[in-house]
Length: 466
Image (cartoon, rainbow, N blue to C red; front, side, top):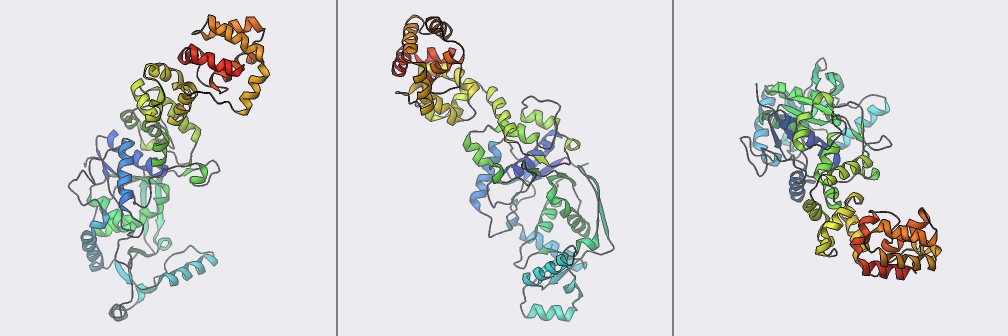
């Protein structure tokens, strides 16, 4: 029995988004969890839209999220090349075999003609499928059009009476009728390979045993099985994961707040957070704790993939971000916070700062904001803070200054002394003190903030509030 091999085969036409990232993760987890390998293949047959910079970005983003491939670009392997644009000779050989066996024919229909035919079928309430018009041309008619240089595609013949059945690892038994599929294009007019063809041939020739992909590819599967059968090539096990949708049930898009992996990385999301979120997006785990990539792989099971659409929830993603942050060491958190924070926080306050703000930040920009609040003078108050400080009154802050002289490092004792001197308690006590010292109504524990500010800075801020 062949060793398990999975693959991720993106088209380099943009930055990798969450849907593709989840597909890559599921594929890598299945391969790793079964002691097999994970292959990366670049499907760049769309010359107009494919870009080298997107290939570079794709590889960087996959490595950043922890998905190293064991075979593919930059790594090599026995089935190179791993760029479809370099596999033309392989495809040509298979086109010839299919033609020799009578499985294909040239189609001279223009895109405009096909568009009109599709429109007419839809208007008549019929599913759009190719009429088979060029399949009925005689050999002489085909030769004449070839001699005239009429552009043509290559179509695969699908017998109307044929039923294509297969077992999907997620969705169970599937069955399609040949008359509903119709003859389909496997080579475009410009000579490039169509997805149905190149994707199926490459999976077979590269020894891919399991294809995990989105359910939008489910109807592609019978076409690919027909191609593989005609060529005598082995078919992988297909597993079609549910679609990711926004809160409104529509396919996930930027209007739902979806971002590319690159955008998430630049915002400060941690790879472990994304792994744990995507690993549970349409898939269930017994544990609700933060899991390592190895643990995610050990618990990944195609049988645990749901059939219902998976709802994207940014709050859940943020939950896993907090879990991932909590698991980092202080040194890792400091590096994550970045050079901007390092340039503001005094070296001798670094440990105190990390301990204070770690529970209250989600991204490096939040840490930078708190660095400025705590170590940048003078402290700027917004209108709401100014109003609350003014409402507390001059006498309140006179009492606070006196209390600070007695308790410069102990916020509990300091606030208790202010309460005793003014008779103010609860929110009316703590709210103006926090605003005067940090300029923000919430945030890190004041018990950590006061000693970190230091007596001189705290006194200056209370004086300004008074």
